Image (cartoon, rainbow, N blue to C red; front, side):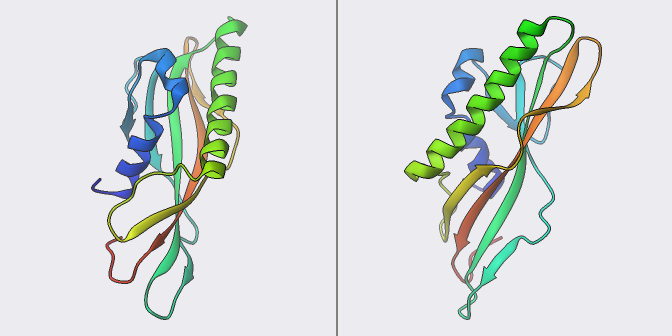
Length: 147
């Protein structure tokens, strides 16, 4: 992996709930097509949680998992999307509990992954909506490791 966001993207691509749609997760770009997914870096107020005397640190990487879905008066489709995001959040919890975390660059070790919000509509038109869920990866970085 070349970056933390790429590691997160690769990890999310293993989510079993994505198999239903035969979709792959992109980075930072969400096409207009429905049933598309992306991971975007998001604001982190304090990326360094703890710094040690040797220069190593515990850091956090906030990211948003986004999708473009059909949206409208068809409550069945809307409920399917809400259910997907609920399952996605539960999957992150299960992975965290079992220690099944993203593989990071050498010198970095994932410690926790979690959803910070429920999935919600971020933007919508009459027929499509962008849904998103905010998440966080916490990891350890050895001294001298790259950011």
